[in-house]
Structure formats: structure tokens, C-alpha cells
Length: 313
Length: 313
Image (cartoon, rainbow over all chains, first blue to last red; front, top):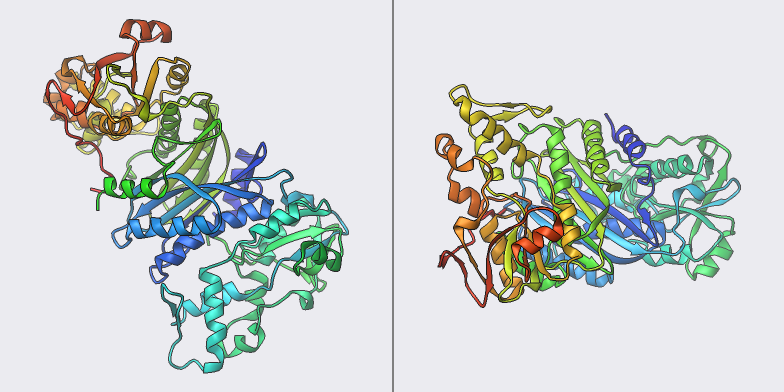
């Protein structure tokens, strides 16, 4: 049984559980659970586990256009985790994002588990289901770094609590800066909270999702919810700086990284507005990568299969 | 580092995290995480794990006097768990308690983890901090069964998904009915949702907590929050039916079960009203077991130490 089948079953049983977060009155509420050896390993410093566990929830709120309000933190704590230090790091991350930790639960566990529920306030929630034929399709920032960073961490690179990255001795100097940037993006993603709030205020923005499972998979999620298709132009997908020149020497599959890599936490959204108009209203760049169509999800005319992250594979 | 130290640290960092649930406007929000081999074992049928994981959250809402509204369910699912069957059982339990499952998250995990966040609505939340000197101290129902049931499950008894209990062959017929009732109470606790709501509507009810860590430990929690003491009369503590006569033959320590046994999910509360007046207003019995005093938590004049459940021992 894969995640898709279970999630389809979940949606049949719990119809409200379709978007990145559930909408209750003017609040949106979301939950993400990170599990040791599934979502991270002990090699990742606690600082980054704390920040990322909050960031994935904030990204869900961002995808709905919500102002973060509060979070609850449930921890399953094994012996190797300093619970107080972890709580301090969660508190720091919450302060940085102006979200209040209102409570939680603690339990012993063999593997470290961090389950966070977060809520935000929104007047016009962005849904996955609002895309309309003819809308333009956007991503909020260049893609590919999170997959690249994960690949490097699985191949001898490491990151210290202070953010210093170590590469294996045989890595050329030219690749080290890119590698460090990719790893930092992977372990310390920046949720698009401000952008989500801004998109929610623009009536011509019709749908939104965050790229947590990979562009291909999350685009399928969006198209399924909106009962539409999409066509993506590969040349228009923005790439993380220097990805193309460094991917080869570092053994990174660029197509895999950009099209299917998960944990980007960029926003994928649709709007009837042109790129120049939208970027101008937002005061920052966003990247048009294609169009919404009647049916089928295509990349340069060929089917784009959802090959992203499946937590259950 | 024990749970108390970590929780004290949590409260310093997150001042709102003091009661059974956090209060945000007219809503209360709570979270409980259950972990395989810490809070339950594979020997417990999934039906009961599902019901109990929701019940512990509903009991937190009950302790605050809240009407249950919604829950989010995060699951860390190992191979041995049928995720769809578990989701169905959670859905059934939610329907039975009129609480809507609004979403959640799924992850693979080596040990089964169920982390539920639940919210309810309340106009006058019951807090731990409202007990006043001279108040009467109440429990909502007879105690001791949950500890007894856990003891039996750890000593050769078992329960099937349909609720049938099996005892070891050497257990006398006279003990079997009691044992089955105690095990059912342990694996399938009934949260005091209706009572909590009723207590919230009675202005003379001054404080409330649910007995999840044991009477001794939760009474200390209540007294610390209210900056008071308490005196409990042992003879007035109501005992689960037939506990006294069956405890000896079954090897159950009655004092341990009644004074320190956790996971009762009875309510422990204080009021200036007499037992007869309170029971009459509630239309059901509640049990006066002592009084609130200036300082010290005493049982028949001797210190009652908090010897209940510590998830971190």
C-alpha cells in the first residue's frame, strides 16, 4: 500500500483533509510529523531538525496564504536527544517566525519523532482546487537545491550545528560553495510565508500548493484537485544557481532534482495575471513555467509522471 | 533528566503550556502522542489504540470543560499496521464523540506513533490554577481499574478486537469478570466530556484536571498551579467495583492502583459546593475525597508523594 492509496482513503473518510491545511472559519490548521531515519538522520544537527520541523508546517500555512499564529509540538524523544536543547531551538525558530508555541506533549521513543500542529489566520484561503483553464502556472523560486543537498549528505558531506559544511577530500574547490548552499537549503528551508500572505490578497491568484513532494507530484495534486491539466515548459523552470555546472561533477541528476525533488517548500500557484504584472504587484520575482489546460500533465508535450517523494515507498 | 524537569523547562519557554490544553480565544487545543512500546504494545488490537489515542485528547478537552470540535491525526506507520483499518477505527471513534477529523499527516516509522491534536470550544475554561483554600476536592468516578488492567495485560491476560478477554488458565472463575472489566477500562477509557462541559457551566467549580498521570501526581499538578495544598481522606476515595476483593488473588497492589495509577481519565476537580448539591446539579454522582488547604499534599495526615506515571523514567 503506497501513500497515495492511504491518502485517498483518508480523504474519503475525512473530506476536509484535502489541502495543505484544513480550513475552520478564518483559521487554517496543519500537521506534519518528521521521523528519524525516514525524514532525517542523527547526522543532522538538532538545530536544523528543530527549524525544519517548524518550517514544513509554516510552508503548509504559506500555501494557504495564512498568517502564522500558533503551534503545538509533540516530541517522541530517544536517549540521544537533549530535549531541553531541542525545545530551546524550537522556541528560537518560533520567535523568528512570529508564531507562538502554545503547548505540546512529550514521550519517550526509540526513534526521534517531531509532530507539529500549526494554525494561522486567513481571510481568503488559497486552495489547490481553484486553477482554471488558461491560468498561468508559477513557481516562487529556483528549484533543485533540496534534492542536491540531500544527495550530497548521503554521499559523504556533512553540516555542523553552526552551519559549516564539510565535503569529502576529493571534492574540487569549485564545487564546495555550491554544495554548501544546496545542503543549507535542504536542512534549513525557508518557508514562503510572506509570499503566501501576499498571494492570498491578490484576487487573480486562483490556486496554490507548496512543493513538498516534488514539482511533478505536487503539480498532479493541484491538477487533480482543480480537475484540470497543465503544460510545463522545461526551459522556463528556474534552476538553483550553478546547479547545471555543478551537477555533473557531483553526480547529481539534474532532471530528477528539478522535476521530482521533494522538500523544496517553494510555492506552486496559478493566476490569470502575466508574470511581469504579478512580480510587480508582489515586489519580487516569481517564475511562470507553463499553463493550465483541460487535461493531462505535460512537460514539453510529453507526459510528466508524478515521480516525487512517496513517504511509503 | 525526567519528564518533570523537561516540562518545567517547556513551561519557562512556553508560558501558555500549563494546563491540559492551551486556551486561544474561546477554543482550547491539546495534543497527545502515543508511542508503541511506551504507551501501548502490538498486543493491543488497533481498534483500542485508535479509540484510546482519541480518548486521551478528549479527556484533556473534558478537563478544560470544552465541547470537542476537531482533531488532526499524525501517524507514523510501521509495516505491521494496516493504515486503512486504523484510519477507519479513528473515524468511527471520532463519529461516536461528535468530533471531526480535519486532516493529518502520514509517515513511515519503525514503531507505531499516533499524535493527535484536538480542539474544542468553551466559554469558561476550567483551569488547574483556580483551586481555593477550603474548596472540596472531587473525583468523577471510582479509581484503580486502569492500573489493574495494565497489570493483568502484563501478566498473561489479553484482549481481542471484539473486546473478548482471555485470562491465563490458572485464574479462578471468580476473578475473570473483574479482570475483563479492568482491562476494558484500561484499553478503552471513557473520557468525561459531558461532565467537563457541565462543570464548566457551574461557577462554583474552581479548578479541574484529568487523572492521566495518577491521582497523587495530578493532585500535585493541581496544587502547584493553584499554589495550595490538599488533604485527601483515603476511605473516601471511590474504588472500582470489586477491586478490593480481587486485588489480592490477582497480585494487584491496591494502594498503587488507586493512589498512583495513571490513565484513569477521571476528572479531579474542586468546588465550594457540597457533594450532595454538586451531584444533584450534575444529575450524576461525583465523589468528595478531601479539601484544599494552604500547603502540603497529605493523605490522612501523611505526605502523599507524587508517585505516578513519568513518561521519562
